[in-house]
Length: 102
Image 1 (cartoon, rainbow, N blue to C red):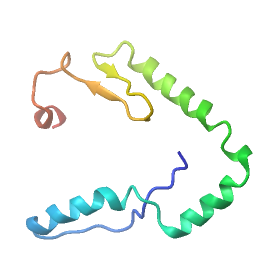
Image 2: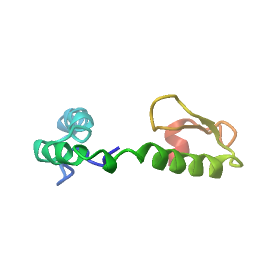
Image 3: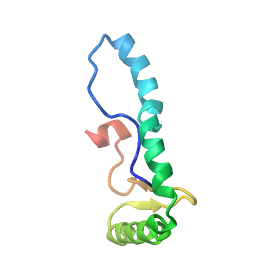
Image 4: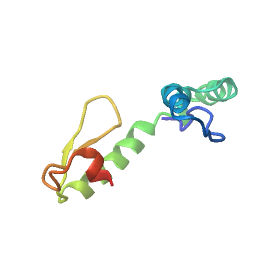
């Protein structure tokens, strides 16, 4: 909501066994917020006018995206309570996920 996920600096090249472990850590590293940004968010949240209208803002963005997908070949699943949307591609391709992405 506040566009403030974890550190996204640098890259890593390592042996396959190490990369497997790094990928597991990465999932939690980039979706957690580091301390300096936590302090900045606390200051930001002290003034409700900064965020009172964010719900409407994000709903408009979501509605726009879903309207664009309405006539696509994808079946859209809209889970409740989160911003992620899931697109089922069964009408587009019968290929397994990894082949479809390639």
